[in-house]
Image (tube, rainbow, N blue to C red; front, side, top):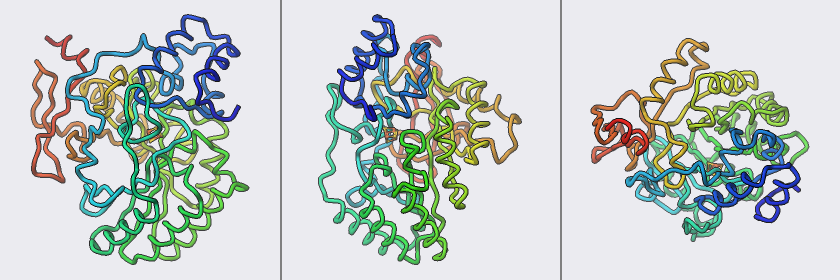
Length: 379
Ligand code: SF4
């Protein structure tokens, strides 16, 4: 079975993998409480260690156990980064002076429980009624292009969603071709977790690979950097297929920069981060950012305290050469944008509140709150 998205298919898989009944029941209850829909690809199923499924770092990201879940902090929000406030035309988020984010679609090959865009991505669940993309794709692209023409200071477009690995290829090709014709654009980045979810899409014989290869060469001639923003959270995700997929791109000359979300129980410990970075470097992927997890609801068990993240960041210093050492950032709630985790101006211990300034917005407040588990321990 290539994709698992029905609870009956998951139940059969759990039986086939000889998962204990207590875990099966715990997982079915966890999925019912999840903000994100159930969906797994074959590569995810193959990477999970089903004999140690309770502690497996890949399982945790897609198949929550009810027993893992924690009480939400009262200040969590589905659109925790206030993207909707910065949506200047349909699907176009303009937060930083020189770049925009274009939301291409709202579907992914698999759904991560901690997704920052859980207000939009995937089908609605028992927990969350998702937003709809109301405007047809071609009209959204027209809006994007008109906006870029009116804002010649924007030279960088990040295309994400959802995951563009599921985009209709002629539509993606048209979008890239149109963007490539704008002389103001110098960088086009594609955000995807597809290298892990559907690695075969990046192999030479696949039409998706062929489109990327052809666009890369064409955009390069026009002086535009065309690169990939990957999303790997654990070294186990870089299995032989994902490594081959990355190699197919880097051997063409396409740069891959990785973004990792720091997740308690998955990668928020020094050995896991070291193994992840070593695996990324071996696959020629640049370890770019490690994100403090966003303040989204129904995934609170994953969030570390900011102090835990700072400690990890210090421990990681010196383990790898400087250009292989990722930057630890927090994407500020209320649309403040990315900032260095160390850059807070004040910390209130009683409430676990960190106060930041935003580099891109004057009006705050920009507060990041530790999970209740931490602030309760501190008081
Ligand atoms: S792949 Fe990205 S957009 Fe899709 S569910 Fe995971 S985090 Fe969200």
